[in-house]
Length: 318
Image 1 (cartoon, rainbow, N blue to C red):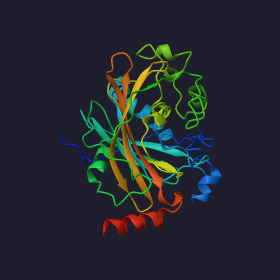
Image 2: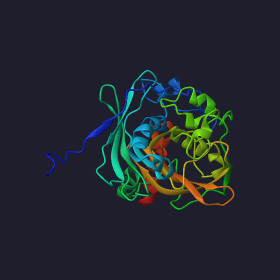
Image 3: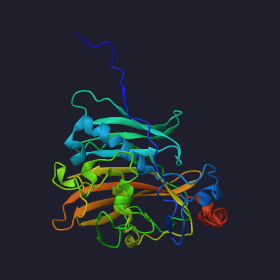
Image 4: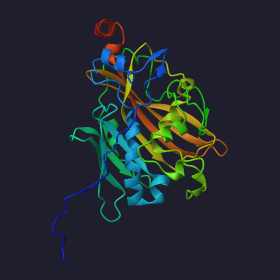
């Protein structure tokens, strides 16, 4: 007997209230877009937004329920951020219900009133050819003359391998001014697998770094990459993909990071660099995970942007 409908249906998670933990974030010697006064000065009247990957945690229980342990070992969450969330707003994760054997599904997160927070895909087993981020990169058109990112080139790599690790009480620096334990006090989806006391109860016998903290680990040493960008200017995450190759990543484990710029682009309001960061086992050098981040710089936050852009365009036509 055939099924009555083949309409995709969504698995709905509960509404959660994510917390702001980047109000004191600094980079390039100045406060970030997550600071209320800075956000308002840049035109975001609701205040400093909560960082996008914070919402990744809400998908993990849903995807673990779909794909089990394999989600932690080979899972990929790929998202384009649509609207900002400020503390006090509630968010719900939604995941398309897969058919038998399906290894990639659509996902989205929305506020209580239905406003989209992010859209994207989740997948396992290296099914990454048509992820949200891969699809968007494939559609990019060459940007016009870049101002803030004028010294970057596609294919440019970081200066060398960066040594990183995440311990429970380790302060993660000015870019992420908190520790893992402080995050675990506020994370929307707590798990004993993440904790110091019960991490050994995980299937791998060790505490797992939460998915939303993978970008924190990547950000800990990002200044060492030495990519030449100009400033001061304010940036925000416009899209992000975190993929486990041989996961998960573990608390207290040493990793090496290598970075490469895989795309450059622009929109009406931003210039973007798309950077792939690969997490290598510090001993074997085998890849364990990777992240692709679309870091978008607000054009109007760079003093003299329009004048400099106009001068570059005139020079290009003479």
